[in-house]
Image (cartoon, rainbow, N blue to C red; front, side):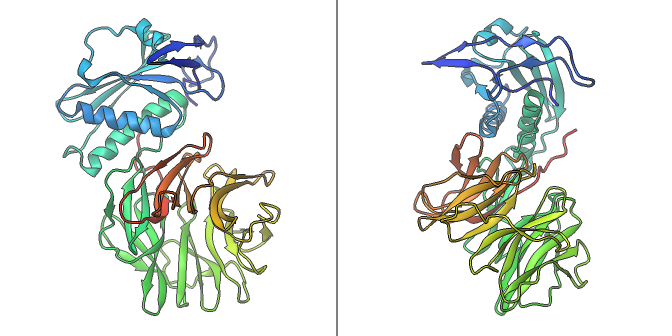
Length: 433
């Protein structure tokens, strides 16, 4: 939990922000939780991001501001950079009039670190302070990832939920595997991989799996990102694809077969062992496995009824059931299941009026919600917060990756340039205490 709860009522009139309601101090607190602020449910607390001094200050502030905006949990109030970093005591009443519940102050240190403080405007005092290492060189992938980590912690301080800025997305471009930061920076090929399809992240973020195309079929490969070391998974079939790691990182599921495919699982690291069969397709296609957060169940795509639908099964193959039987009954095709990290939904692509669209189905009541209507939209993959999805869309004429906030419905374009598809969102890549 956080010392802050979500939401502040702010009215925007022209360029002026005025307070609609004043946050109130809570009179009690739960064990281990600092006294915080209470807001109307569903609203976004205002956070005033002070200018950052030093040669790298503008870059740091811009990255943090964009990260907080992309998280869709905070309203960022950011002054002009030319005002300079503040000196002396902060003017808390001024920040309150501007609609800020909190003020973020970042001070770059001589040793290359950043000292970050969150000020509570109502209490008129510093609420949280932490020092963050910023590995050089400036604007390198490692440096940017560290700054993203600052934004994630700020979001956690205010809302109680760690942000998703310090993450990356794998995707396929021109048959090769690429990666990109969550904010669209550092778009580059994954070294040493080459031709690949259907990438998946291990939960520790250190290795990935994908299907490698060969002249005689495809094989599932596990690739260590730091060393480039690879292991080919023994499947005994010419066609092996759509790998997915279990949330605890102990199992790898994939599809394999010849005239059709079935699902198999193998213990991570036991790549030479015979895999365990999960489904028996008898000529149908069973593919695209995705684990429930507890690892006990798997959602997957199957053509066993003559058309693609989403099914559920226990991880050992027991208790299979049709998930999308009553969902969008006019849709002839469903695929690309992705189980949300909070366990509430399975996202998928569904054909509607001849075009694929992104939808979710609730695991509680089977309620379906469609999120896209423009262009062709496929390949959903969840961010670690269970609120954002990356997906492939042709809405601009070329297939690119886009990010969807399922609570607001807002989307933003992630990739540009040559076509991109099959996005896979990483786990959080920094272990910030």
